[in-house]
Length: 113
Image (tube, rainbow, N blue to C red):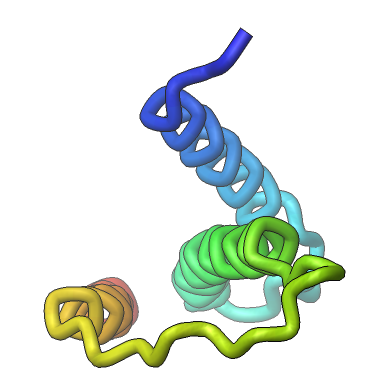
């Protein structure tokens, strides 16, 4: 039975989201709260941990899949065709981190103000 790629992508995305939410809230990396502002700072840290862990899972997952899927075959000693820039892809992989960093910056400014 072959699962359609859109459903498989959805299931992987749901799995990454659930694992990153779980780890982001249960990492046990922070000390006992010692000030009144600790709850706000801890909440911001939890959100940043959730986002960063999800991104780590996503990027490392793509790297592992690409390394397995596109590995060099034993009988293939040729060079691949040269690849030229893909402007829409470059815009997306520049815009998404910029939006994430901007969102975290705005959230932290509002939450910790």
